[in-house]
Length: 124
Image (cartoon, rainbow, N blue to C red; front, side):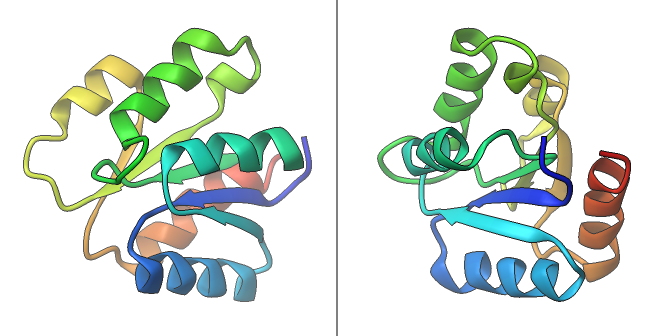
């Protein structure tokens, strides 16, 4: 697994590119996707990341469908890749309980984003 390799899956272009730029300035390699299907393609092309930052509400393949595909159809270790859901959705308790994801509420603080990224990627 390449160290400091993060995938950001977010349909909001400004937020996706901002997270990418900030994480890259912090020293991470970042690949982006605008929906879950593109995210799966990025992972297939670039290898298993140390962290996936995932929006829930997206077109084509939403975050719930992405999680289901990742967890049910892929084998370990990919299926066990840490996922942090980045969402403004009010009801996100299910994602923590059912999928074991971390949650970052929008708007995301830089401290929280960097702390999560370092926690998952510095040890790889």
